[in-house]
Amino acid sequence: MTELIDELLADAADRMTKSVEATQHDFASVRTGRANPSLLDRIVVDYYGAQTPLKQLATISAPEARLLSVHPFDKSSIKAIEKAINESDIGLNPSNDGNVVRLVLPELTEERRRDLVKVARGIAEEGRIKIRNVRRDTMTHLRELRDEGEAGADEEHRAEAELQKLTDARVAELDAILKAKEEEILEV
View (tube, helix red, strand yellow):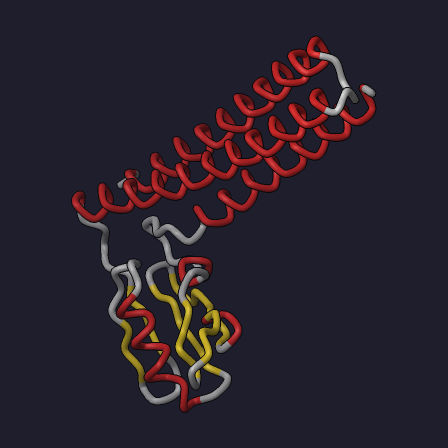
């Protein structure tokens, strides 16, 4: 009986950890004061009618601290890449010379920094929602086990308490990552 509960809790812990890692990866796409190729990770280009991630269409590099360069594999996709960057929420204006798209990162204003903190908080909230969804799914499975007679009410309560501790720990981990990201954004 408790084997099933332990498996459910282990699975929940694994899924929550993956949610934190995914959210941490999403944070990398939020701009700070330095050029980082992962800023363009969320950009999707309409490439001949198919929604394609930019990193599948081009090589992205940061040759200088305030410059990103995008080298498309197919030169005919430059206009579509420029359009996708312009329509994104990263706030950069692309320029191209027919071969390479360049993105100069301007100095962040105080207002832009505040906007980026809001974006980061939104990403963190999505991460918290993912973690709570894992908790909800696991709670449903625990109730099903109790209703089917596979586990007793005491075991269910113990497992729910354990699950809540897991959830709280992962949310705290996410909050710490968010705090560090906010400090990085607001750093002048």
